[in-house]
Amino acid sequence: MQKNVFGENLISCCKSPITGFYRDGLCKTNQEDISSHVICSVVTTKFLKFSKKIGNDLSTPIDYFKFPGLKDGDKWCLCALRWKEAFNNKCAPKVILEATNIKALEYVNINDLILHQF
Image 1: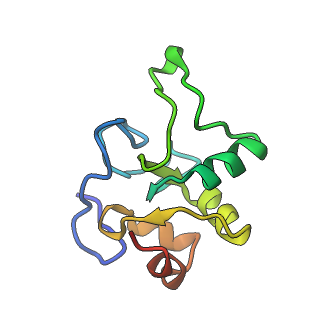
Image 2: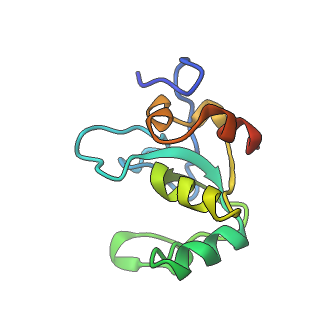
């Protein structure tokens, strides 16, 4: 079982929409997940606009990938560096720490995550 930022068992981030690198609701990762989808976030309109502006449109559905498109309030396993980029641009979404993988701490400071706790 993978661990969260507190060293405890990782809990589910979201099953509707289904999230995670493995689409199992958990922000689990492995060496194949080169983008490290490890931060369980509660996305906001501000974040979604920012992400789209920099080339990662998370709000538009993509039927081919069975991706419904995200909206304000949805929970999603974000890539650690995308969350950090949003943080640096003052639009990082809130995070659910118990569902955020400990691997996130290789990219972001725990205090920054705590400040954005949902």
